[in-house]
Length: 362
Image (cartoon, rainbow, N blue to C red; front, side, top):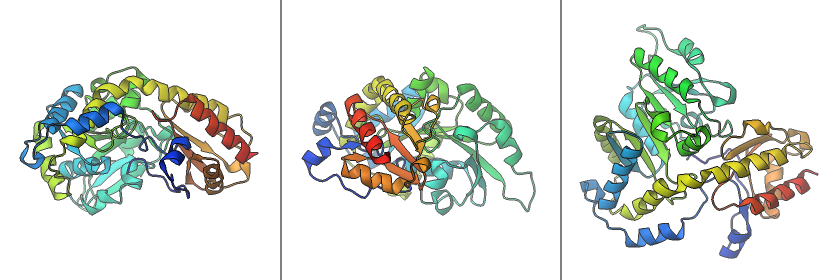
């Protein structure tokens, strides 16, 4: 799951009143649908999507393809399923997929890379999670009968565990161009690609145009309850539909979900700059807390990863203490924590979270 972390909070959300007063910064997956989304879901025109007869699903898929400048798109329940399908369609068993060492497909998708596609990851560590062709080229396997051959390159934009970092478009396009020269497809795990687009000031179709396939989430940052999209050529999407069914993703009257997804796709990217501003402000304030270490200048989207080793406490200890104060932030390892700003946490709520952190780290 895209918002997964290594250490989970020990306190649940409780009743509705408790949820309303809690500042939940665990992920941008915790948001609840807007009133407009709820109305659209209640009023959605539906049909059987497995037969291709759900008009709301069809509209969502058509609109996603248009926005990304692609021939076709398919709605899937989760980002993990979207990534899994993309890898399966474009690789063969016994091959390797190049990805960044902290990449989501490698660390947080239940080894589906191997379990379903029969591939292994050839992981590369990169500064801020941003791969370059100079890092990738030496890891591409030489042609030999006794070596597992490179099948694909997969990038992640924004990069979740690297702190929401963004690929410069020129860097991503060089990787695509050089990989294509070698006959290798390039997949983009673009779970938060709209955050990247806002940070770069470029539309998503421009920053993704050279990728063979793109997965993006409707439920991260964009506020929909469920769902992700996979876009690509019509031939690719036709194959993707087969694997969606095989993975149990063939839903029926799923237009009730797509209705919220349409609003998420059309309206919610317009406000992502607010989340970015809140994250940057929190990073600047966090850097002032004794024992916490991070570089605020590297926070360009809605994810903040910070080191707590100087506090003398583990991330799990801090997470538990914060939960007692009504703030939910997860650790990603014993010494690092991650917070994610989103539409359900305004600047005042961010301020309350910071005050709780000051108290806990004192």
